[in-house]
Image (cartoon, rainbow, N blue to C red; front, side):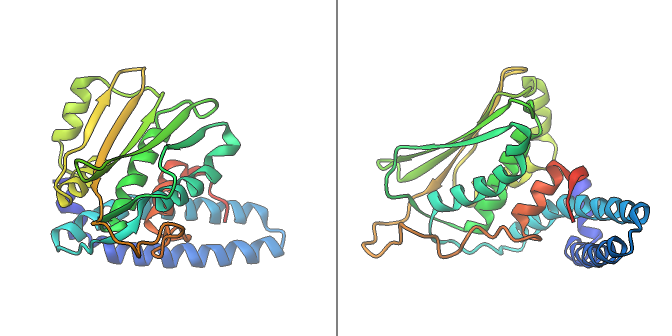
Length: 253
């Protein structure tokens, strides 16, 4: 029912309006600062934070809409570089608080996968935000592990944390509920590449999700050093908006 409500509201138009509102509030904040109107500045910032939060919430609705419309464009891309770029962007927002995101891989030249990199990025960032929401922000850790299984023709991406997690019954309830939360995005991405997520939850003892992404067929011209698609982490990108959902009360305009 929740997902239907989002669709009726037209999440794409809502994002457009909220993006416009944030831009106007940024300009207002700048003008107020020049006039030393600090109390009014604070009000503008609060309104902008609310807009960013709505944007982050609507982003998952848009993501699910893309799957429903078949708007999936698989290509060969360097998943190693994309993951590193996304982790780097998230790390900028978490490092100052003491929370650390680490990336572990024993693959030297990168991994070329075949999937839609934008859909993967949205799924991956949902996992990162979920873990960051559940760890101790003063000393928590989130590990990202990349491995390849050549015989199975896939790469495995694991997002593991040492946070509070949830009980098995809570996890089952979360997975059964159909809405616009991160688990729906995770499920849809895995369906699109013909795999299933492996989820491990231990209450007060961490949470982990592993997803498999098909490897691209061997190609001597594959690009290992760079990712032509980029990470797409500009201010209003899906990745950034999901990060705003993590810590929307301390956005700096």
